[in-house]
Image 1 (tube, one colour):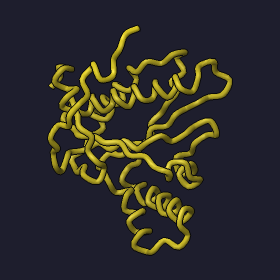
Image 2 (cartoon, one colour):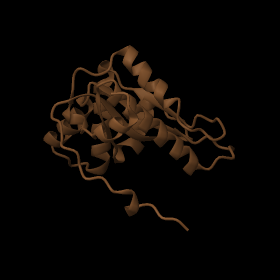
Image 3 (tube, rainbow, N blue to C red):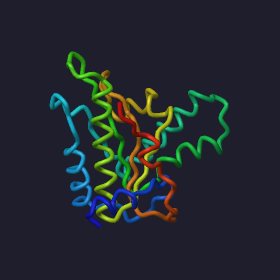
Image 4 (cartoon, one colour):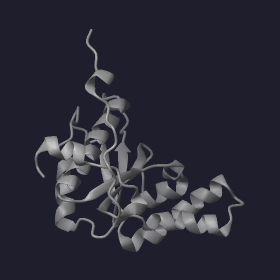
Length: 187
């Protein structure tokens, strides 16, 4: 499915807990990352990067999720803490999208964020073209000290979202999409 007019409407968000193996192998992941590199990049700053959370580091991610929960709710029940840790096990391939907002650059943060969004969309479409399902997840845990330490974020970096890649456990019917006259006008 390499025709963009078929690819765009076929792409669906799949929640990370509904992504199962197989996920992309190293060669497929490289192609997906190659697609990210095609994103617009005003100023040639590459204002983004991606961090893979491999299976052997998922427990560390789970600990960061649990620490984030404990910061929000120090009295969280053991079951809630276990559920927070378990979120790290979702999706066979899990990446984190990082905004790199380097100081002293003339490009506004909003443009850098748009570039990151384009890189992510390119990745989602490339994954779809390769036969994989994908989904995004965000949340307050991304901004916690534990997550910043785990991802080794610099002061000018921000974790924006998780990107899950794999095979959809359940396929969803297409949702109604807006028509151009609902979001387009002319002066």
